[in-house]
Amino acid sequence: MSQTLKAVRGTRDLLPPETALWNRIETTARQVFARYNFGEIRTPIFEDTSLFARSVGEETDIVSKEMYTWEDRARAQSEKPQSLTLRPENTAGVVRAYIEHKLGETGQLQKLFYIGPQFRRERPQKGRYRQFWQIGAEAIGPPSAGSESPLRDAEILEMLATFLDELGIAGWTLELNSVGSAADRARYNEILRAALVPLAPQMCVDCQRRAVTNPLRVLDCKVPEDQPIIETLPKIGDSLGQESIDHFAAVTAALEAAGVPYHLNPRLVRGLDYYTRTTFEFTHGGLGAQNALLGGGRYDGLSEAIGGPKAPGIGFAMGLDRLVLALQAAEAVRKDAAPQIADAYIAPLGEALNAAALTLARELRRADLHIELGDGAFRLKKSLEIANKLARRIVIVGEDEVQSGNLTVKNFLTGVQTKVSRAELTACLKKPAREVPA
Ligand code: ATP
Ligand code: MG
Image (cartoon, rainbow, N blue to C red; front, side, top):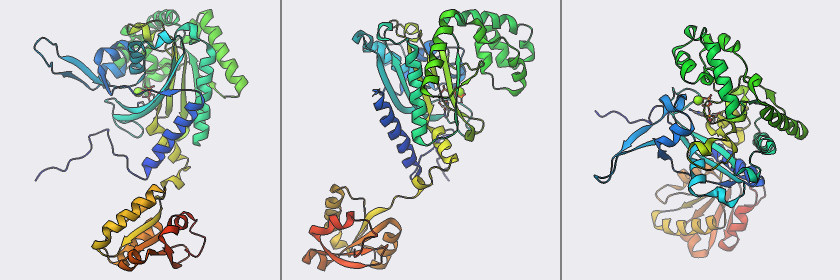
């Protein structure tokens, strides 16, 4: 006996009616981002592995153990096989596209958003999957386009607050920090390295490695036993240069003026190496252990790190899977979860009438009505039973109806059954079912 095939561990099928909720989130994102003049970008799902190694960082969890990477066979003898990777995040792809298409030469700030699946080989649990979806956006451009301005940071954070509010996700917290410039970070890394010499041997094996290779990553550690030690480490805020301090002060001042609440979190560093200065997360209490709805920040040196021009930027990525969970936790979605009720169910009385029923359905659907099409093989009783569950009305297509052009319509809400001419049918079906007669 062959084994039943199942979706691969860490991946899952999204089914209706839940997909309606996914669509609502995506639609809200598109609407809100459009008001801030962001345009959509779609980058490939796989990229050259070195893109992620150079941007996300070799020492990060993502690159060191979570990527789906394979050697793509060479097409010709002269070609070397290419190492390819399913994208674990989308910022690297966006910045690669920015460089490849010379978007910097427009001299303007590029405001781009994306919606799509990402892949990480993580331990699957609630809110953590191996294929998950992100909605993200990036504002990137040459410094002359204002890409370094703290106003950009504040605007993006304000946009996120607006998006979550419009979506109906209550009770989010904006956790905010600055990790300083590349120079500040390098200085802090050395301070951490020194501080970790006596402490690392008491920490988890990952931290023992990070303490040497990339001490900042120690702050990412999720091992509970390591947390009291991490609490004692020097804070990055004390290593910031004056420029970083001023930049961050301008961000928080703008947020306060706009009335966006935030919480300063001096331990917040992001799991990717490319972040500089402003870093943030939006968390939500209803999510349990996976409480981060989204994360982001500035990446002023990223473009240069992958061979591009100077192009400071700021962006974020939201976990769509987690937005769905947060909305479900808030029980704000009961209405969306109800199966969609069609405007009408078309019931052909006999298989010979199937074609006529399809023709009618085509006409009504083109008039923007939601139509369920039955089948002439069903008896009328069965059609009525199905229709009652799926639609507000049933339209019966019998031999007489086709001849006379008058269709039998039954309104399930009022129980009234009448004849409606084909010319009036569309208007009739568009009327709320509460209005009698049909
Ligand atoms: P976490 O700390 O939860 O692992 P992260 O720091 O790895 O998050 P980012 O790489 O910044 O997260 O991704 C941004 C957002 O994408 C996260 O805040 C989260 O909502 C979502 N996300 C990240 N990894 C996953 C995953 N494996 N499954 C579902 N959502 C995810
Ligand atoms: Mg992670």
